Image (cartoon, rainbow, N blue to C red; front, side, top):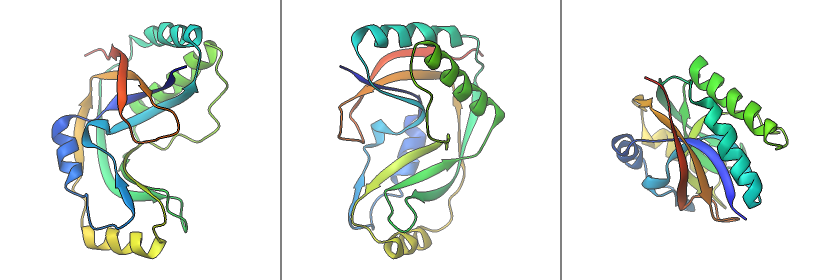
Length: 179
């Protein structure tokens, strides 16, 4: 059974610049640069027929347009018990529309609605046993985050190994966005 999700790739040059933030946080498990992405919709473990249905439904989104992604800050998920360090994405109507379209077509393919609010981000590290004080110190020491921009020219149907998190991710199918 494949574990699937849809997302946007982070170009290599942007990934390299994000990777310069790595290090200096004991207990962080840093994500490999080639696995940086922005998740649009987590699908989960599905059977082969459902995977085929998902791929077919995603074809319906071929009229979506390219748009600019802007990474603006570092943040954490987990509050007092940090779980991950991420680069945050500036909200945009185009990104919100694309994510909502993914939600609609995937529900049409028979998937349950996503229960979590969409918070676009690029996960940089998984955190286990890292204190909120250590993360706050890391963020303060890391300094200013210069915004990074790139054009989203396609979205991807990815697969991953179950229960590991952080990759490796495999591109199962790509869907170009219109110019």
